[in-house]
Length: 480
Image 1: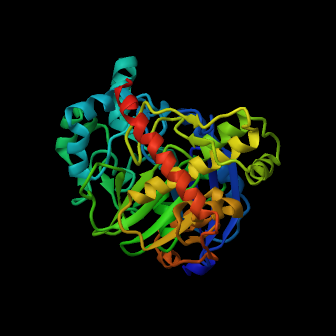
Image 2: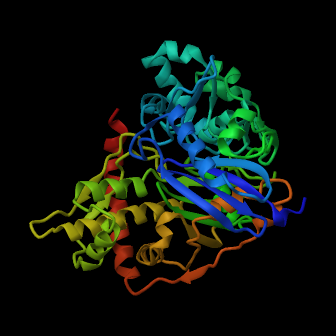
Image 3: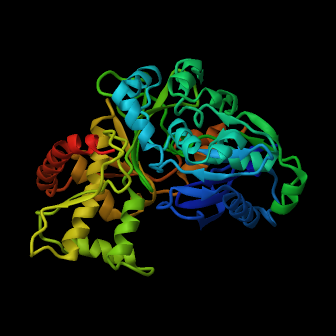
């Protein structure tokens, strides 16, 4: 079959939204649809069955009536967390990556040196939203539920299971926290070191992205409106799909994401850089390279909280917010955006948000400016911990906003390439289907944004931001 006349059906299981699209052989995303994820990004748990039902409806909406061939189905999405399949095959309540429920385990691991030891082995700093930490929490609060858990997977794995009936995972989704990035297989000692040896029998063996899983089950295919047995191929974690779609190929290529979380993801040959433990290492689609993921807990979820609690409502709430950002002429207020604790570029599960510099003259517009800057400064902090970055591509929902792109260039103090194509990750996912590999070359329109004269003042504010963090970090470390 000629790939150019066919399409790949892609699902993206995000924290904020569920997305689906048909990606044609020409790289076009057609019939793209998006719906809110059950619960939303501010909720650290999700109903796995509700996520499946909403995803199935979304895929049906996209696929029904499509007359050209659908060559494959690929699922990508949020990584980490604890998505469970019970012994009866049903989905249980899932913990998302931003849950702080596993904070007690992380605090113990940090105190006894396990965090440092695990980082040297895997390149990943443990945080409360990893499966190992959340498993400790589950055993403590609901031991019967832990015993009834047959499989521990990620969000994309869960949807792939519902499509095919097969429990599987790929090396990118399996990377955190047990994978040895050098062998692309689980490090058996990790399960023992992290105090959850029983998970070794509850995690599926990782396979390569793009591997064939099975055909779509007949009853599911009928619901979706596609051919029974349509091949399902393993996807990857969403940040990998975005990097693929950006055209990243070599060490030093990096993507900065303005999404539910702010993240910097550079390609590197070193899975565990020397120095203080920071970030996570995810297997790349080809051996020999690794994707370093420095994802702050700050981002769109924090901005959504600010908008809701400060009266920015309705369909024009973002425009109103950015108008206030532009209106502010104060440089006094500094926001630390750590509503969900922090994991990168420093590990502090007990970190909290903070507004410094409040005075009687502070107005809502000044808080808006400080909030936008605080999220962006968290991105710069991640970038400074990323090692060598030669090319920086900015993407994610926030990259569609020209004001925010300029703020990023000003805060990081360097040129950034902006690819605001919201289908970047979907195209990257489709390229994993056999015959569609050529879609990995950059297809989106990219524009360069350079720092403006405002960069100098923002650099001074950034150093105040870092000084406040340094002062508070010992207090956060003592807080359990």
